[in-house]
Length: 130
Image 1: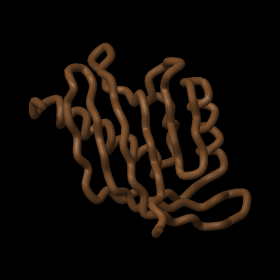
Image 2: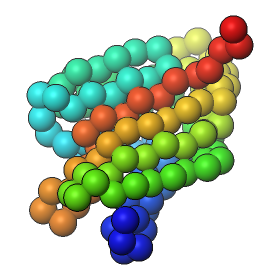
Image 3: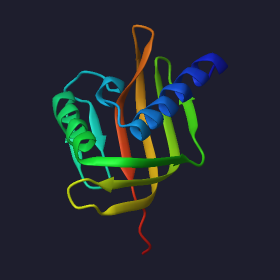
Image 4: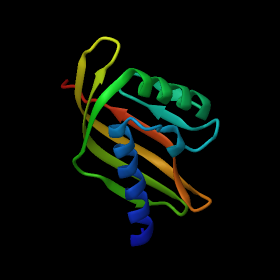
């Protein structure tokens, strides 16, 4: 991967993490398309419209996010990029007051569109001991 593209993709991912911390809209980071997918710790959203609705609901019902990246790796795929990360993730549920805290694994793909990198898929999971 060329150093410039890698730096651009890493910056988009880190900016997404920062937007999550600040409670800013997250849907602008996603590609508008029927095959856009976001898998979270407790939900799966298929299609851009469902991703938007889910992210708006998440922003409305949560606060005080902590997002701590522990190992972001990025690879270029000729107009696409893949990524993986281990992320300490916590937030407060505004409806219940409960604090949630997870060590999560993130992976996904971004596509370059009009000089902008956008998420095509994001998968967040929380590992469990077997």
